[in-house]
Length: 313
Length: 262
Image (cartoon, rainbow over all chains, first blue to last red; front, side, top):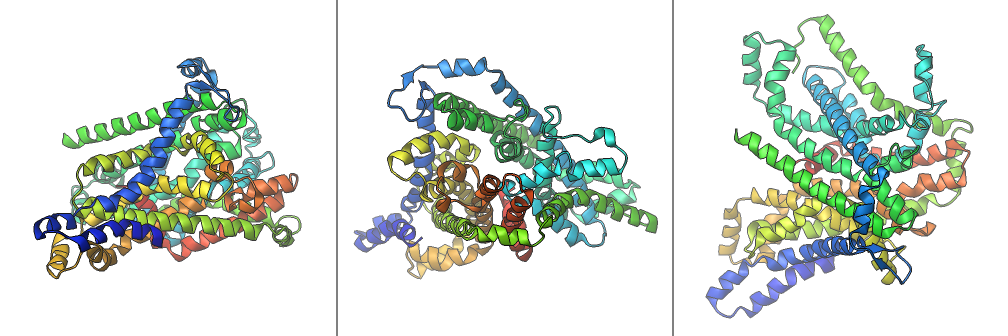
């Protein structure tokens, strides 16, 4: 901590003490380069070095350890296009993004609206909804494996209310495993959505709501035509956040289902890990990483653009 | 937002809230129930007696503190430069860093694995601290810069007239005003560092270097057929986080929502 702050402040101080003429001194005093360089060199160095290196590795057929790596040009990228698991991962990511975003937005918005009404024990409910957000997916993964197991709580509840036909091992079934991964994610992130919508709703002028009421707008009508549009900025930010989050998804599918069964919960992150670390196809994993990075940047730009266009209307 | 005039509709709304909250509680109930199943509290004693729990916690604390310190110092100084000082080509530097926000950490694995192995940093906490800091810094700088932008320049001008140099202005005038954003950055970084999983999974192999997020995996290896011990370990890792949140609710909520919004 101390070393870092002295390197940041050091050059400024030495230059000041030298301070040749008053005029250049005044300009130098506001020179910010020494202040931003330590952080910039650290971040850009590590990240762009890694990205550049990944681009290079992506043209190799390499296991990461052996001294001989075969240059294959764009071969890895060609393999990717023909790899059904890669396409399945992309499909899962898209479904995952749309579903988790829609459900979290609906739940977060509804909960925030309810808490803004006069309800009892609001803080208790808020704490319960937000706790999942601060817990590590790695900590909760064993819990969820049990929760959705054949003799887990979900199946016990289903059997308890007479829905025996629905009870089954959720995670071992390729048709329901992805749903479970999405449910866990929704469980984890709705709290954040809720807090943000709650804050956005606090910004709405009470007079506007009052006016709507005087016009005899009902609860649902007021929410839909006044409150929801007023929270648009929050919704767009959350869309972008969840888009990048969906592309980065790793912990939950890796820990709860390891991408299975039969790749039914494979995401780009888990597939890169499987290819790169587990099977030592480092070149192939690197090429998928690059596609992932391009998707993240392009997606973020598109959402940002769409937002600006809409805001300009 | 809902206007409820009648008692019946008020009760209905309260019920709806309880119904919507219940699913968030159930997994936590399952976790605690599972941890006390069989031997009861003895599960925790057995887990503790393996002797690895304090090591994992110590490493997590070390890791989090290092990342927080680096991110705090880096973000506060860099954001000050970006917001209040003259830098040629400032926005280019800024955007080069902001692009990193979209970067999935999985991209760092192969290059860093190869590099850290060469530098003999593989399987040390540094191998996790460095990339985590690099990933956390851009957003912290973005947050801090937005905050500094709201600090009136007149304050600095006044200080300069009094003869203060830039480091003095930073230290005595600007830094004392940054508490709200600093606490948000610290909490956000703390959660991301404490809960980080992928980087420790790949870069920390020796048990003496591992962190709390790897604890469940460790116990799965130890007691493959005994769910109760694994869940007891999960409860032990969850308790500090939940306690920290309940004690500093406002900070956590502000920090995490700052993490979602610009």
